[in-house]
Image 1 (cartoon, rainbow, N blue to C red):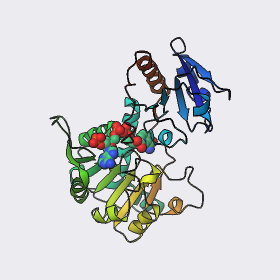
Image 2: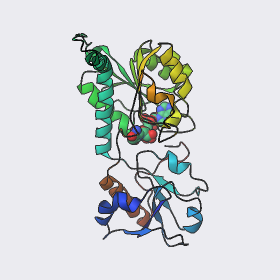
Image 3: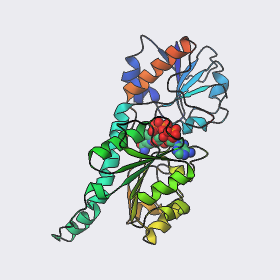
Length: 313
Ligand code: NDP
């Protein structure tokens, strides 16, 4: 089976070269030469050219290079019958857990205050609170959220988790108190000191981190935003930080990336930011997703990590 690399902005061959070479005996990887190819059923894609779907009319599945499928779903002219496949990489979730734990511990142990004190050569002990006194709420409890929740629980933080649907079974090993729906969100917000956004970007979740949600968070709460930039109402966050309702925010994702140099987030004292680097899917995970997808297409099955296009994730 053949798989074409489709991107206007990234050199996918360079990014994933060795991993793709490792599966070349099972999947022929083809570069996009601008021509019409009805014989290719599979693509690895990131921001493909707008005419791609017209030039590859035989496509049956489009693989993302990451955990989220939102950017592929937003492609103009995306055929409705195409399966959109995301990458589910345990190593990526592990890296996300470390990244979130760094921020949660940074808030609990007041790392920012130590940095300020160091600049003033001030030897000041801050008597940090115990992790057990800092409940962490997770917006989204899927592949990423569960790994983050497990890591935080091992460190002693009480974990609360919000999803779209009510859990149908009780997992005795699940460390999180579970919530769902609008009422569940209110209950979780009122009980969390740190809120971590691990939601996919969908029509329902876009703009969810807004003034109304910040008001329902506890005074002195801390936000860790690792979902998508479009989840956040930026001016509402600045207002909630400036009026002292929120203690701070760690932001990894932004509506405009790279974040423009003049953006107020860069210099806001309550904000710690990183350039969308919480974690990435590994090239080997991308290659094995392509293989599993090609196998499913050959056998007439739905690819294992295909998203539900109607629900958006
Ligand atoms: P999953 O699809 O595995 O999990 C999604 C979770 O979000 C599920 O628990 C789902 O609920 C919940 N959810 C979806 N819609 C709603 C809603 N309307 N209301 C309440 N809960 C909802 O996704 P992943 O965990 O793999 O990834 C989540 C997101 O993390 C990605 O889409 C991406 O945006 C972001 N991400 C960011 C990275 C970074 O570097 N900053 C790296 C990787 C991912 P339910 O369980 O009921 O279905």
